[in-house]
Length: 233
Image 1 (cartoon, rainbow, N blue to C red):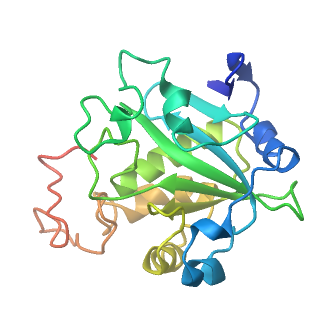
Image 2: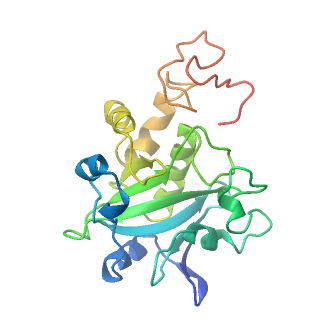
């Protein structure tokens, strides 16, 4: 298990748990800014003005990196992975749809901490879109959210932390929230405990889009065309 903090002046530093860095968002004044959101999103988003931490988790390296910087500028996720030049593109190419290596196996995320109760479990927002390439730094399948949940649980996150699936505006679409609630996928522990039962091949949910489309005879998902015999989750 490897969890690192990242500071622009000292680079990567090994830490015991990712949770210890989340509290720094409050003391350093990093908060979710409602001015960057649409009015309808501000009223619906539960993490407006929460402390905000940025980080990445690798799907196969057993590695998480959490930013612990004086500022959280745009493009910071690219700085977190820049040391892995064998696998990722440098900024700004890593963000481009036409990237070559992109973010490799790293998935980007934001952690939100309640400033009024910073010691309680917060919200862990994973960048999510089924339209993205696997190397985009975004969880492009629901099963990749499962994989990240399993890794961060081992990396010291509170299992009661809620997982949100973030769109490009750092909010979660209402339909996605309703889907998580309906299937009981609220906390990190929920995702780890229930994923095998819910998703194909043991369950009925598509591992790519999460829709209720597999009932035994289907060869592919009728919603997103996911084919379990041809495509990796």
